[in-house]
Length: 397
Ligand code: CAA
Image 1 (cartoon, rainbow, N blue to C red):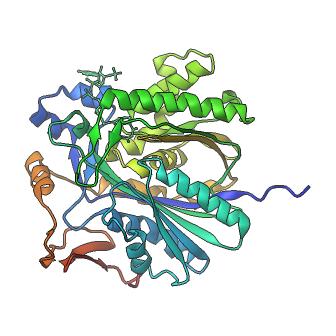
Image 2 (tube, helix red, strand yellow; image 1 turned 135 degrees about the horizontal axis):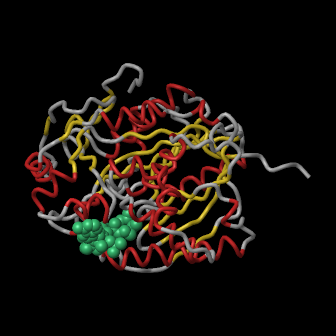
Image 3 (cartoon, rainbow, N blue to C red; image 1 turned 180 degrees about the horizontal axis):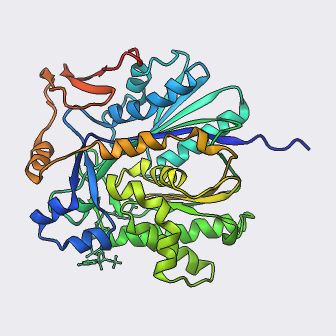
């Protein structure tokens, strides 16, 4: 029998916004104890977009180093996962396709199912590669997490984008079968088309997340999945980093082991570094946790890890991946650390001012000031169209 062709993540990078609001600054205005933010939800700061940054510019910035390194000739599909859609009809990925100068003979699609959509994109990409291993798929996940001012969710905002190049014989990790799946119609978090912020039942959403973890784990095990002891680490979707602790404790309990808080802390520590400071990035969040783990000191060569993806509403998946020998050579660790440290801290007043700014809804022309240091920007709007530009010559339009 022919051994199954390894298919998975060949390259992986993230980008975030150029501005950051710390939880110290937020706490000064909400009156919440800082310990609630730092320990109760496990967040230190959150990325805030400048006026000329959005899901398209973040996604293009995340993908640009992947294109610089691997070229674009083999990319036949671009899948863009988001729940911060900018258009009801046109896929956001088409703007990225132009900004990166991708081949016109490419299929570009946007996928939506809350924070889960990037995992759907990853699995669809793997299936495409298995049917034609000569091609590559660019998977992008980009979101801006915004909640109502003064709501419990406000401290769990953030923004970020992930770019993953999916290919046969991947340099970083291969995606395994089986995976565990679960769908349930639950109103824990949703955003009707007429709203810019979601409606959230916070406690219910945490319970729905944990129930989905139970159900996907059982489904994974019933389909012949590995025992928990064989998973070297597990990355969880992180709406806030403390959720990874809750999830890991829950999974340990399901597997019949009781772990102390210190052991749980140690088990998830490598996966929370980036999410703690970037905040929730919805579709990108799980893959930010994965990037954080890969960029950590832990040597994961030949190890199998678990990934738990949850999207409110809700759809969830528990899957596993095997890390490849030499994977460290394919990482962008320094770039990732710089993306976080080079953000400019903003005051609460600036945050509120940015939140109050809106793009025209009447077709009026708007020129946006150049604020972002990124390689792509939203230059303005004209006749109901968003105008994007590449500001770096390495990425021709
Ligand atoms: N020191 C230390 N800890 C403190 C503290 C203090 N002074 N004060 C409070 N805490 C702890 C609380 O004990 C609590 O811990 P536990 O959860 O372990 O009990 C934690 O801080 C949070 O406190 P509250 O429950 O009082 O917080 P809250 O009412 O402000 O709401 C939240 C928390 C529900 C997560 C809210 O931030 C929220 O609605 N967030 C958005 C929804 C969300 O993220 N849901 C997660 C699952 S859904 C999902 O995963 C999809 C997605 O991306 C949105």
